[in-house]
Image 1 (cartoon, rainbow, N blue to C red):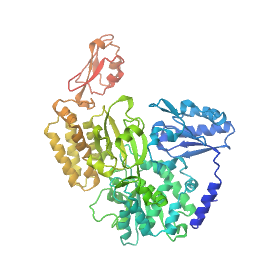
Image 2 (image 1 turned 135 degrees about the vertical axis):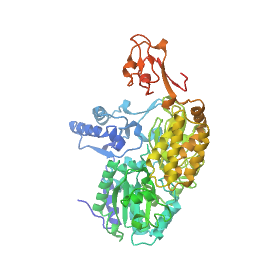
Image 3 (image 1 turned 90 degrees about the horizontal axis):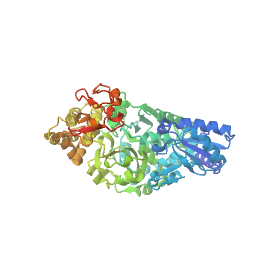
Length: 623
């Protein structure tokens, strides 16, 4: 039966009881099952583990611990055997019998399932010894390994809700805000506004009701930091929200979350129900006289709803579009009441700061950029996954020391930070530290933490076109500079990729881009031109090649590509002819074939089909 905590002493006593029951010698199989793990088959691995343990009569001796993602998505599904701390990667259901019989029963290691470090040509047994993790400082993500997200007892057992108990029993709201101010924590959602000052503005606003909001509307392509935290350690976010509500004087909290995150929603709902059962959410929390509850509001599926005022409109049931500020949400937010909005990662930092102190947090990172930040490292990189590092870590360390470099020996070309609203940073600026000021100087932004790595096969003009297209579709259309400006930018860049550009277009793109940045009402429009402006700044030669020579140096832009068959190399096998969807290839069997350029749609299927390297991919008329 669940114990309802009447006060903080009850919570402390319960934690002691949990710790006394811990058996450090008990064998556990820890399996990561975030959305990424399940997509790779982690649920099937768990089912096979349960079956094998029963067959070997080990179901009472071995615990299966189902956790959130540990961050290294590239090698999922993976599992850890404790207390030996043996880490197995890319595990399939058919591997389980060998793991149980050899590792659990015969005490042997299955070498082929260990992580293989290509640089040293060696295998690594322990998870934390893998280079991907070595340069990280995992303050938030480390607990994903220790807890089952659906088990509040796991969280309490690792000092969960101790920060809440300290705040409600020993601290005044003003003292909590001062601690957050002194820590130097800045919002992790993109704008980077100092969190403590934001809370202070909302606390000082006079009203009979106040709201706090967790912005979990994570819309950047390739970014999934918030999803991971909510799936793997929801209580850290919820505890942070309660502490923030107490400091501000809010009675109601809202988690605004993307409807594409069903597992995260389910995990949060379970966590909140458990909190209510234990008396950690609702009326008179820990006998402090403080009442606070949280509800979930599904997102509208619009990228612009990540902007605070658009998010508020969506919560109110209105069209998700921004409004002019002031008044700011801290003064007039949801239903006209003072509202404080922080994102998932910001809330997850709050218990850490309270437990460890403002000085501990401010000592991590750099001046003006304290603490750690979680990034999703994706694209043309060997080690994709979630990376938590101190702010100030360089882009080069992210790409090569943690990310393991570029696959297949390709050359690095650029890294985009800040999602669709960010800029593309070239190789000669890889020494740039990741902090708000330095990224801005390089023509990009921190954003919510997406890092997209690009190799030599990427066309930077096409990259600008892709992100402009995304933002043009996601613009709410309220202000003319954003609505019309992004569309015109996209038209010009599209013309360039199709060989219809003029040299004057480059100057026009820069002029129009700066107008859109300066005159748009919200952050979407103000940052939308970053991709085109940064690619012009650092990769102008590619724009010139597209315009002057009608070439795409990376051979990506379809309108500037042609496919031709080399007669001397063609065996007349007919494979390309059969594969062509437009019947653009002609020729007799065992005789050289030819491609009709008028019919060719440049899909590249023939190029991929030919086994004799007889078809070549050219650009700008060069073959």
